[in-house]
Amino acid sequence: MAAFRYLPAPLRRAAVHAGAPSYTVGAVAVMRRPDGCLLLVDQRHSDGWALPGGLLRRGESAAAAVAREVREEVGVTLDPATLPVPHAVVTAPVRRVDVVFTVDVAADLDAHREDEAEVKRLGWHSLDALPALSRPTEDILRAVRILPPR
Image (cartoon, rainbow, N blue to C red; front, side, top):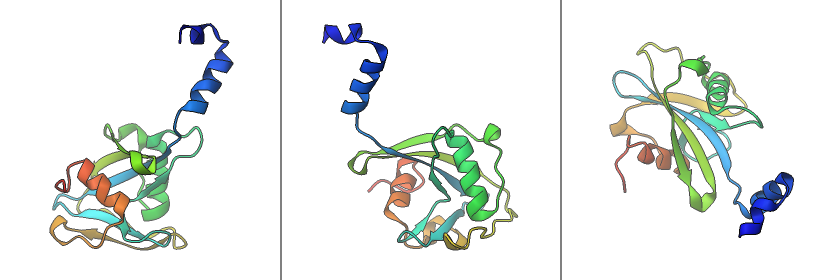
């Protein structure tokens, strides 16, 4: 479509937005102790245990979002500037993109429930004794190769 490039920029953007699928974008942290245990949260709004994280706010970077969510859910402060390069996990059937930060933490990290309205409980779990995971969490852990593929 050669004429597309001659359209004014606002019309080009509107055409792209109208034809592009919309996705929800979240940021999650895979927090791993030296013994390999993962920090998981049991949230009130979902079935199964999940990784700490949540949706990005408009204009918020993924690093800032994961730092905010981890602080709100498990009381741990992460510095967005020092987070590792994340992985993007795209789940096309449900139109979701998760930006996943794998963070190695100290064995004595003081994780504790901060948001009692959202988080029922939290806990460290070994890979060989994981509780029932939420589907998105299982998808993410498989995508970043912490769990084997199906």
